[in-house]
Length: 118
Length: 110
Image 1 (cartoon, each protein chain N blue to C red):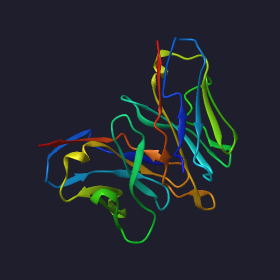
Image 2 (tube, chains in turn cyan, orange; image 1 turned 180 degrees about the vertical axis):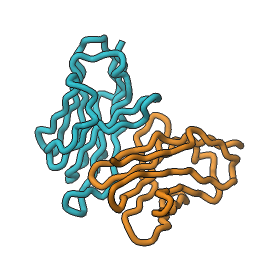
Image 3 (cartoon, each protein chain N blue to C red; image 1 turned 30 degrees about the vertical axis):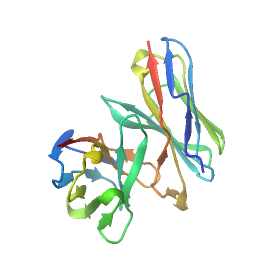
């Protein structure tokens, strides 16, 4: 079975441009997470979904960030407009629940999308 | 609020030596605890997890971790490290919402 698939792997853009990151979770997984990794702030949870519904978006930095999950096999993270401080590696991860309302904890990570905003 | 603290940013150990990476957590209920490893340019991979039961859990690649509720700790150990263990190690806590520590970078001295 394919793992979590993220695209693009690398994105270089200019300040003010819109950026869309994409994620395809593992089939059958009902949790999807978006994390951002930087040297300064480590691995930050931005938002997570359960059964396509956003559960907690308290980690989303500001209104410039938005995430959607229109169906069980696809999610997007959008930054509009982008700023240099958004430069980071963005990871998508998925997992499945073995107890209602709780996931197994084994997050399967994609390889990440490295974003550079000039 | 849940949080994870990994007090060691960078650790260097000699190949063949034992290893212990520290992790302290804050969580309002019985925690689900995890250790993940990240190789350069890669995503994270689960090493082991604790949900309940035996407080000493075994993971992949010869790693183990011990849950100590009284100390709010979940330290990762390995009796003898190999050069291939050089990586970044992350402790995490959560049930639905998984929060990661800041990570500990492990270097291996030949």
